[in-house]
Length: 70
Image (cartoon, rainbow, N blue to C red; front, side, top):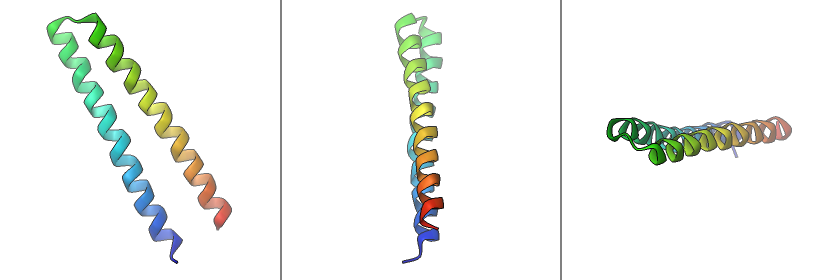
């Protein structure tokens, strides 16, 4: 099994999923600014921050697993 190809695919899907989540929350944040909804601003910024934190921790664990298997 070629692990370098599998890790590239893993990183690609990892980036696509969390980038999509952060982009959606950014759009909701801008929409919340446009309609002046404080609740939408709080929820979208909180979920975007959470998505960023989960993204970075998942990336770190995948990199660590890749280093250990090499």
